[in-house]
Length: 262
Image (tube, rainbow, N blue to C red; front, side, top):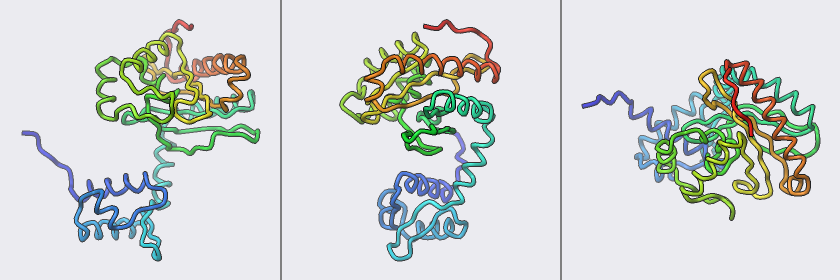
């Protein structure tokens, strides 16, 4: 019989933080108790401990709890330790100045896409998002390139854990269609997602490969769908630029084997 070394109070605190992270307007003690199924007396002590360490904050008038700024500091420390981010950032800056577009670096973490770095365009328009933002794998350009090389069994497990949620009228919501799409992405070496996750947004992504020829990150850009629809040459140029820069980043982190390009 496997031993369970988890600490129940810590586990409950983490569940509270996860709920608060998904609730930008905060949650009350009653709401947290309802969603965690933790007794209010126990939950009260957990919240007071988190407040004492500035991990969460409380609106005293509304009796609403939200995430505190201390988590931001911890998150920035974790992001700073990612060597890939350090290596890739100058490339994002270069691309943004070269094309006047915004560029993003993302990873796959616990079956979700997480944004770890970005450089915004100097122009007025930019895709408003934040570091640490999480997105689904099945309907984002980054998610598709990061799972395209995975075995069917691994993809089946991800689908079983999270499902294939519909976000727009064109979101892929069946396993058969998703696997067909992933095969296409694998053959092309890039992914284009237009309006499948966010309406009116066209995202283009390519994988970044490590020394073991594994797709460990994605280099991505996004433009309004109205622009991509009017100027297909723009999308083609962005694909070429992304592939070029991703190849350069990949080689800096140990990638050697040349992959055939479409």
